[in-house]
Image 1: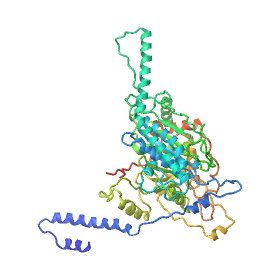
Image 2: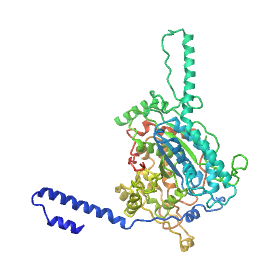
Image 3: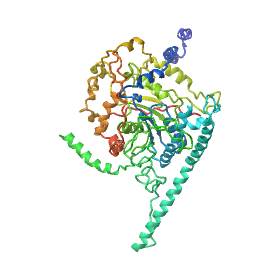
Image 4: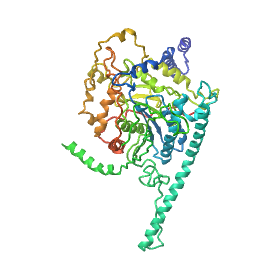
Length: 295
Length: 292
């Protein structure tokens, strides 16, 4: 590179000096930055971990801790998804399953799924994944499955019985495979089932309104307006984005939803809290801040 | 009230499931579905905003001192990855590490990798090279953060006045070394643990609401996350450690009020309040995880 640059500098183009100066400057600069880029690559850093030492340090059996409970810090795992159409829920569910099956003290882990689209499809897919995890995660622990993502595990070309010596492995694997296939079919059927359910609930609402309408004795030629809502399985409106967009339920306009799947107790308590109340408080808060600034 | 996973293994029984889990731990970690509030007129900041909401909600719900973020089309290939990350974080000097990044590997690429989708040069060349120069940059996913660092606080090393000037955290990974026998023989160990407000002036509990909004739970969780994220103070040379056995206690059950608090911190109002402070440390970086 030095020889080339030397030759370029010593052989100027007399007819177009400005062009020559520009290209020389660029070449020297790119040469310099190329060197800056290459130098660190000469000695890449290799890290290695010693999991035995970690285990030895953080799982000490003492008098206060006779069962050797883990002293490791907690870890929160975040998964972000935005659009169930572009990012299929099955892929997201697989990610969740691989996270739930991570080899780490269970009570220290928490998995958070952020659904920016606020879609009922993702929500129900997560609920399905949580129930399939009841089977998948202990299966992974029992037979040391790797990778712990069911899709890539069942799709891998490696002999599944490699390094497996437990006699019930083949039977277990066949059952889990079957369950996984059924899980996949359930996930694939979710969009349809949500649509059918919503249609049924909407039709019921329409009937109700019609009845009210007739009883009130209003003009029958007027059309009845029924909002096309998206319904959850328990017969309530989904607080997130609706299939047919309406105010408060459009894309990029919905309230916050937070649901904790309590997998341990096999209880899934709906704790969806609508934020409308919170929003009503907003005016009050704003006034308070203005006062604060004035003082 | 929701009960967190029990601290001791819970063995399955032979009959209840279609598979015999009689000697396997059947507990599952906590799984939370979050969809933050979105309103016209409030900038939702795409993925950074979503991460922000998650950081806030998780601070109230579980407050794990470490955060691993993944995209929905990623998965953990090595089930021991979280433990390996902890090896670095919990090592001597680990309190200075802001984040640990796992390289991305791709599936479904043509065998000859004609379009260089594996990004071998980037992940195995550049990133490992930069590791020696104070650490590589964040590629947007597959990264284990220290929660405390994400809040914008300085690492505990040195005098806080000095570190205040330093605005950036640097990733320093150190190889986990086996403790030598002579270290173990030291029986009289004086635990040199410092309180968090001693090294960072901003960690004063009275000042936290100014930076993090009016959620008391969130402000309270910050020093806790800091303390829990420290390495074990089982040796004299570890200045900023925590006492061993601190985290062996079981987690408190989740109460409905806690969940309500978590919902309120993911609302638009909380995220874009004028007095709300710079929690928005995450900048959205487009990363190359889409394969052709």
